[in-house]
Image (cartoon, rainbow, N blue to C red; front, top):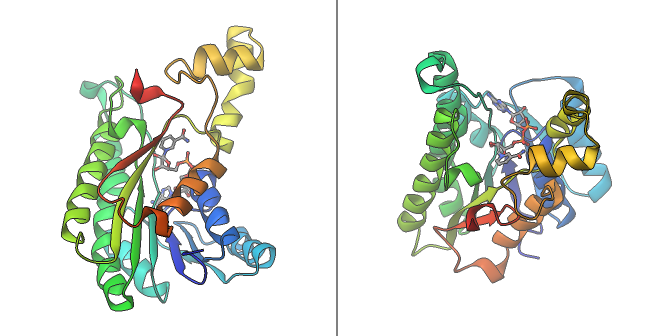
Length: 257
Ligand code: NAD
């Protein structure tokens, strides 16, 4: 496997998709650096668990992805970077004329600006090591829009644009840069919303998933964090060496509509 023995940094990886990606990369033999803004025992325990389960090196580095200098420090503290997965992200939903300015600033900083800072810091490291893979976790909202998600849609479109730019800047080097665009993914956060929605609409779990949550996802199935991880591992493989500057949708057909 191409990723075997490589060092992968995954931002925002103490839960959800980031953790799923870290686990799939570790399963494929990559050493992983987990990250979030917290510094709890359980964060470090997550890394220790991955190291033990997959027989790789796994560490946890605290860094707040809303702060440019901390994004850059993460790359330095990781002690090497062959694979960079920009995954940290938050959401806030409101009409644009009522969108709180602090929420706008936080979403743009965490979901978009962080990728600028980490890529700026990681590319020289990859060049020195002679190989690199950047995978930015964008969204179906990097390609389409929904009402009330101005900041998120702007940030994710920005990430897709930045991905193409970095791909062109590295096109003649053994470095690729791509974006994965998930539709709805079953993360603990999404799972936790199901019981309340069942009560609110007096619906079964299946009805809530198909008729409320997945109205825009033609497959009527959630994507999984393992599928996100598998897509990232593929983008890091030799088979994907000529795939750069593009988006891969893992969205059950959402963006085909
Ligand atoms: P999640 O809330 O489970 O994970 C977000 C991660 O980012 C967490 O580990 C969190 O600790 C971290 N994070 C938040 N703020 C941070 C900060 N300031 N600094 C460092 N880390 C920070 O959500 P998720 O669903 O796993 O989302 C992961 C990514 O996937 C996001 O970029 C999100 O936009 C994208 N995405 C998710 C879905 C979905 O359906 N779940 C769909 C499309 C795209």
